[in-house]
Image (cartoon, rainbow, N blue to C red):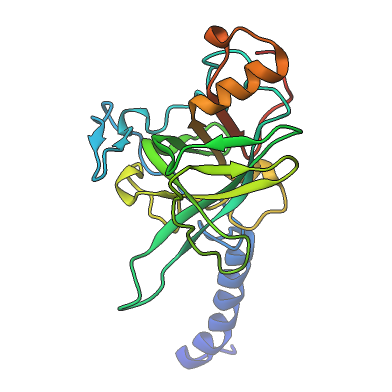
Length: 254
């Protein structure tokens, strides 16, 4: 009777086992392959306390993972008016490198007006800017802060901060005023960094619905006066707030 030696059995079985392993790897993808949805940070067992920040702002950590956005409830009439308008212009995180500054996450926006000029105080909306970042697919807030101040910047690249003039910033008819708002790292919900708070889910996607929604508001009494003058509304019932939402569902009232 023909018998195979132990060495022969090993030579025959090793390729078979290798093929089975390869087949299993192809059949069951890894838990984090290219384009996969990253795991979400755990939801806090109890709401976190809000935290005061240097400069007077407040990190609204109690709203972490709360999905009540993206557009805040109106505080008066006119927030849906076409003009004046706060336009969202994108966001980005940057690490300048050692000795060149700290990492930062900046949101860009602009204020546009119609046929009337608008004079905003300087600094713009000092202590009256709010910023929220909502994760996609009902994830809720990734970051939330109130009490910020907007920085007026030039339109060139890279933009530069514009010193506040004594009389405020005047936006001429048909023109815009470019603004930047920086998200403080202390306003991030647990599990996020300045470089992950803006990440899409899945990370590699062509669908805007897979990406975070950024909501910005800024308030100034001049906004209320502008709206009341243009529309004839009662100033007492008119909102002094401009709202920008990067992406939101179809308009449904308010």
